[in-house]
Amino acid sequence: MPSIATPRVYLAGFDVFRADAIEHGRYLKTLCEAQGLEGLYPFDNDVEQGLPPQDTATLICHANIAMIRRCDAVLANLNPFRGVEPDSGTAFEVGMAVALGKPVWAYFEDARTLREQIGHDAQGFDEQGFQVENFQLPKNLMLACTWAGFSKTAEVAVDALAEHIATCRPKA
Image (cartoon, rainbow, N blue to C red; front, side, top):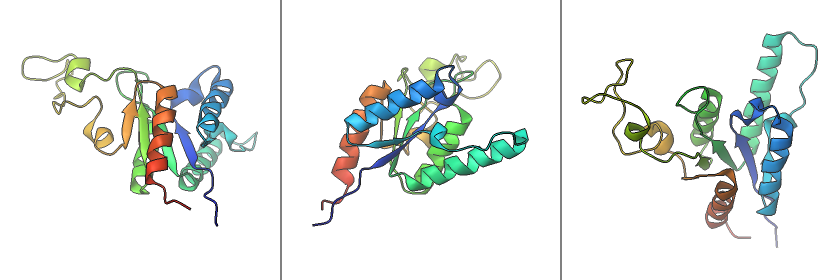
């Protein structure tokens, strides 16, 4: 009887910019392992040292894309980053995973609707004059309408993603 390989989960998020990024990545991978998942963290990639910055960026980009292609699902930290929106790199990774047909489970602390999160006038325009979505969703519709689910924390999200994967995977 064939065995089913351990599901691989790409750990997307701005966590790579934290001062303790490597330790945090280990923590996320440990959470995955406890649920029978293999966490793939961007810092797992080998990056040649001493390259010009743009070459390093290209290498990291392609390595992360390859990692997303190898994974079975994506766990995405969609907490606000440098403003009210999620990290643009993470949003790219989520979009790529969705395009490849891989389930995405998001996590973020503030589950209020965008209208509740972002200040706006009586007509729904923010201080810059842009309409704030009113779809009763906690994130932009392109994220919220394509993820498999979302949780408040990484810990809860890993558990939920593991359960989601278990219900969607073919049995051996």
